[in-house]
Length: 244
Image (cartoon, rainbow, N blue to C red; front, side, top):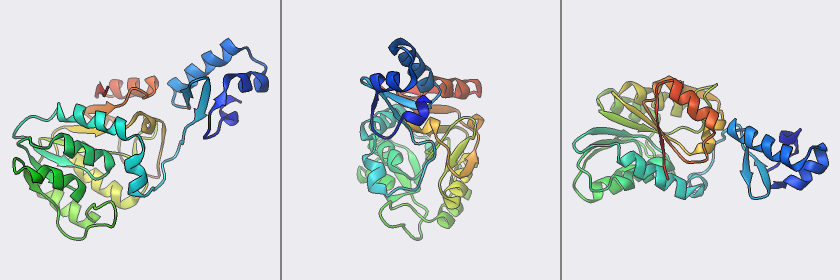
């Protein structure tokens, strides 16, 4: 009943008490439990619903969403990348932040979007490769066919990949078939895979799966990640890094 009562705007504990007839202490305990399973997000005085299914969004909106969390994730990822490594950097707003965090580091990077390639190439310290071919509008990512060809000829020490959704029960998923193909190829191109996603994505699922949680060596996420999801990744063999 609590889940059905929630919407995109905060619902207060008092409103939930009136709706359910439960005590405030019971409501608060239930909210904590449901948040731990990724079913809602607690806010001051109440809770809000979470989006359980990822959907395609314009890049400008994705980039603005939780920009602070993505920056924290990017710096945590950069700490895992050693000098002179060969690195694949996926497309997406979190990956653009990762490239900024790696600016000036001597790596060899295959970047699947111009938004990642430009900051890395700007200092002249990194060796930067891109797939070539057509660049997609707004996101500035390369088309899938070019990415697949480039990944087939590149062997990485480490790959940084994003996902629209990564609920442990359904695996690593995205909203388009083409993106799933590219991310699946990333997983096969590297010795070590870092999944870099904000905590809310660990409660979502999308339509096209590109991998399972046991494909991930390191999960870098934000403090709001559900405890149950973190434990599932840990049991599957991933090292968990919470970006402060």
